Image 1 (cartoon, rainbow, N blue to C red):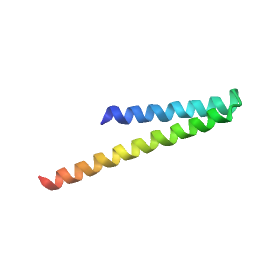
Image 2: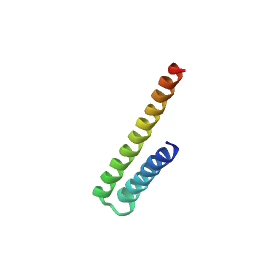
Image 3: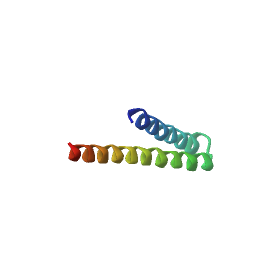
Amino acid sequence: MAAAILLCLGIAIWGAAKQRIGATALRDSFSAEQGKGLIVAGLTGVFIIGSLGTLFTIVYGMAI
């Protein structure tokens, strides 16, 4: 689970860099929009994985 969270955070960081480079240096709006999509996807993945971990902990704790 930790590897998946790190992967999602890496995707979000890559998207932020892509958005920054696309918006300023290259003046490429498509690259900036693609970076924005990567940021949203990465952070959504972190949220979903974190939520599943929390739910698993609660359900497992109730079973004990």
